[in-house]
Image (cartoon, rainbow, N blue to C red; front, top):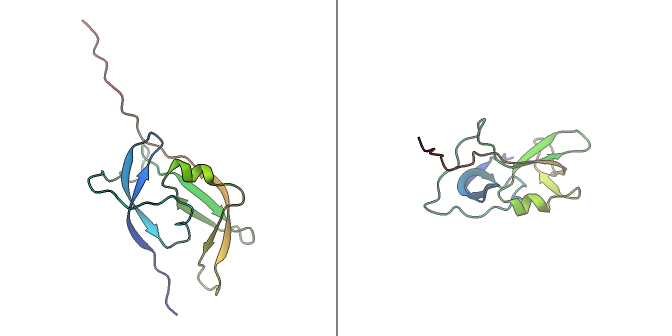
Length: 123
């Protein structure tokens, strides 16, 4: 039996400040229907890797039977606002013939530095 390997491609990510980025994200992992993905736009800068200053918006889903979790990147604010207690993700689990349904638990906001103007005070 073939294993489902994760596929990755560049997708359009819009952060909380309204800035557009191209973000390398996984596809075909069960999160595509609710994550707000869109095709990457040429000329849009790549989003930096996650660090103390940059964090991507994520939704945490949990299997109520085994308490395993699945983390999905949410690409738009609208998709994050649409998540509710009835939102589910079907995840292929190794060793199981059928996908396991995970339910939404929480959404973690994104983080990125705010660009501000510098102040030049008169001497």
